[in-house]
Image 1 (cartoon, rainbow, N blue to C red):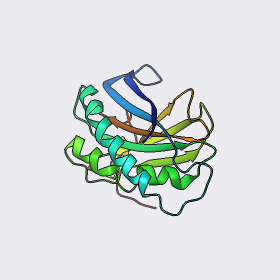
Image 2 (cartoon, rainbow, N blue to C red; image 1 turned 60 degrees about the horizontal axis):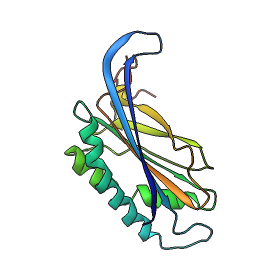
Image 3 (cartoon, rainbow, N blue to C red; image 1 turned 180 degrees about the vertical axis):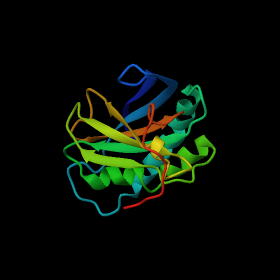
Image 4 (tube, one colour; image 1 turned 45 degrees about the vertical axis):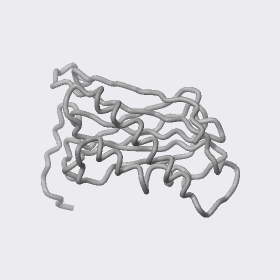
Length: 181
């Protein structure tokens, strides 16, 4: 794996957009900028990216959880693939093996880890979806953390993002009722 940089983004929210106070929520994301070994060409076997995703998750999750003031309750992951790559490269990085080290660092996680992948140019942002780690239908924890690395991805790079939070949305007003539609 050829890493160019690691960026850590920490966001602490004290009020909602209307100025109404809330219990502070901290969201933290790590962005790993790596060279895409498959940029510029089609390859059927993407297992090398499976291994890279697992290795990055193992090396970054401990640091992220240590930065949270409270226990982690939400998580998410995303990949932003440079223009010489394709969506499958991002999917291969974040899907098959990244979940295990994320759950291990959090001490569990029964729910699916929400994810997002897109192609983008340098400075593109991506929305990392967040969801409760154990309660997939906790509407109050459906959130999004918009992140970017200003000089990435270059056309032959992938930026992998992992994010965790110690709370859900700020002052949520959508209840956790059963699905009715």
